[in-house]
Amino acid sequence: MLNSSLLRIAAGGIAYQSAATAALHSWGLLNQIAVPPWLGILTTLLFLDFAIYGQHVLSHKWSLLWRLHQVHYTDLDFDATTAIRFHPLEIIVSMAYKIFCIVLIGAHPVAVIAFEIILNGCAIFNHSNVYIPLAIDRKLRWLLVTPDMHRIHHSTLPAETDSNYGFSISCWDRLCRTYRADPEQPHANMAIGLAPYRRQSELTFGRLLLLPFRPLRRR
Image (cartoon, rainbow, N blue to C red):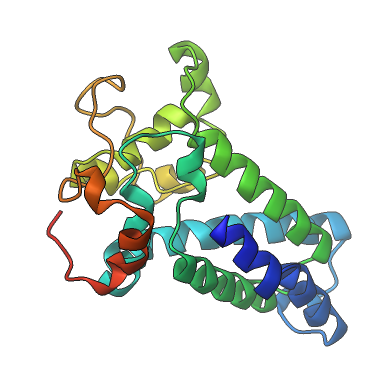
């Protein structure tokens, strides 16, 4: 509720407005060259998808960003609510980064709207606590990030957390060699969350808001 309210009050429609402004002033790569609309939309979608993948990797590797990003992993369960469990400051940082990427590529405004829909829909899907038959899951994850694929990323084991960073299409993990097919423990038994934060008393709303400003704990 806090994050949704923050976005609506402070940044509602800003991604689309950034793309429209870039188009008006001919900012960005796609606004400098003549390309068919369908190619501009496809290029925008792929570029933004990879940009978010890169941001995700950096959020794990750079301690300053990890301070914010770790809030997402303190959830001891893995379900659709995990998809919207982010620190409000990370929401703002992510929006600023997204605006930069939109202006840089000269994103097609229609593609930006489509990307926001895909971003939110895929996040809810791949964080959902659902069972997909293994045979179907293995085929589906050649294109999309499935819940089983992304659940590994929420393991308490650092080697598993540092894999499967994609949120929409799964090709970036394969191309960048961050893909992991299976966890050490079966999905039904694997521990979810961060090893240093296993007590519910540390995971209250107020404590999570202050978590980025506390000393980092070793994973």
